[in-house]
Amino acid sequence: MTNNAHNKVKSGLNELLLTFADLSAYLIKSDRPHTEVIFLCSALRVADRLIGHGVMDTPADQRQVFARLEELSPAMANMSEGSYANFKSRIRKVFRLAHGRAFNPRSRYPLTGEWGALQATLDVRTQRSTSRLFHFAARHGVLPEQMSDALLERFVAHLRDEAMIGNWLGTLRENIKVWNRLAASRDDLPFLMPPPVKRTPYWIAFEEWPEGLREEVMALLHRFANPNIFMGRKVRKLSPNTVQQYRHMIATLVSAMVGDGVPLARLNSLAVALHPDHVARALAFLAARGGGIVTATMMQMMIRVRVIAGMCNLPEEQREELEAISYNLEENAPPERKRRYMASKNRVLLDRIEHDKRFAALVFTLPDRLASEARAKEDKRSAPALMRTALAIHLLLTCSMRRENLVNLERGRSIKRIGQPPDHKWIIDLTPEEVKNGQELRHELEGPTVELLEEYLADWRSRLCAKPNSWLFPGPDGERIDPRTMAVAVQAQSRRVLGVAISPHQFRHISADSFLQAHPDKLDQISEHLGHRDRNTTRYYYARSKQKQASRAYRKHVLKLHDEATRYLVRHGRKRRHSDGSDEL
Image (cartoon, rainbow, N blue to C red; front, side):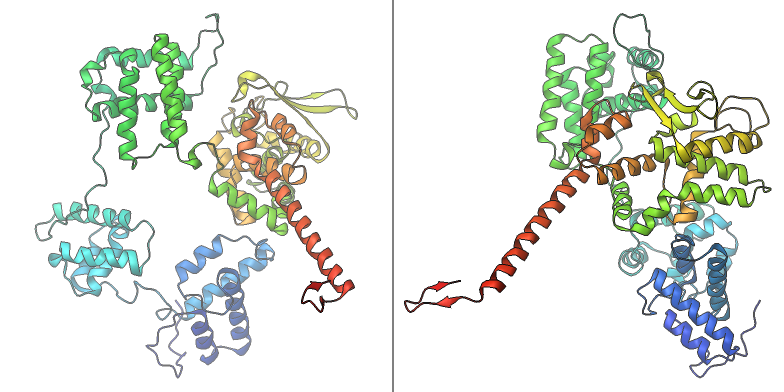
């Protein structure tokens, strides 16, 4: 604990320090050593530049300041790791010296008396869930037994307009839910009225369905997961996630049909549930709940309804009606729903890579940096995992692989060496059964990729798992590493170095988009590399690079015309006026 009693400044002991400028002035007026004050004030200016506007108006809220600093990496701050750690230590010291006086909305209204006593009886999780409500009530002089719905109305305004919480309704619901749970265990606390739910629930549990429908759905899902390859027609095994999506889609349609008035008992088979009239009623019900618009989920539902209709051998006439419904959905969907778009978070990331050259350089050299760090701390337990992540990101960038294919790589099968050193080659060979859309993929590794791969196999892989196995990325138990574990590692290391968590699939987006930035006319080529069965998929997600390049060329053309016109006017002088009043150049 630091004793600040000697820092008695002329501004008064009770003055609140609201901004970085206030903190700096406080340090200058204190009796701390002059050299220390210089270092601390310099750290404040750097922090203000990194997370604020650079004019020292950043709020002196320690929690928010360090939350923002944690989003940055040493590289983003243009510091080494040691320098960045020292910098944050100085910021912590500033707040420690200003303890009790720096900006903290809740600390200005400490919980005392009955509120403090009530909070002391709660576990930490409940304290956090009720903290805003408790502090707000204490601030307005309301006792626990005086809590009321009238106070909640003021609390709502505070959350929405003063605290400016985005999900203020969710915060309100959570506070009320926990409060009512607390009131149920005591006799002296009143219950609070939660806000009305936005929409009434319509979901019908699978167990409540007619037995015939349940059995047919379970048999259908089993066929999706375990197709009979001897059926005489093209079949493909679906992943567990896709099977679950089909189940959820069917459950949504059945629940929506009942919600629109179809008796549940009537839906005793898939053929009845997929009758065009019932499907149309379900879609109308879902559209009404969604504000009267056609959603992407509804369009995806119709794609899968048509698949199931074909498997259930529905009459040709009914299948044609389902085709018509699907067509009508497409025609009446909002413009942004008629084609697929990349998620906004991915677009923001790609835009930053395009316009921030330093950030782009850090992204594409991330595997090199992680590998160097692993070599520098070779004796530490974390080093092999760090090298594994470095190789994984390198393969994600060079091969644009999906996460499942990455973690499923096996030595001697899907990743293998051909030939003998020094004339050997390493290839990744993925069969159609291994790829999401059934496309065969083959990648030949070259240069730095081979060097990193061979170093990993020779020096690091055996330290990840002592049990014999063939996985390129084994887990401690000798099985392949869990895909979620790999994703967490990739995101954690990218966040640590770049300040931004990049998922494995986002590296796939980065590799494709960067190629089209340099080669906007080679959409077909990157489509083949990605293994897209339909080139429209590539066009939907990545063709914006081609449009941007064309737009950039057009702007250069217009500016060139402008410059030529300007030079022409300079050479030929201003307009000359004739005696008849007309002008000429």
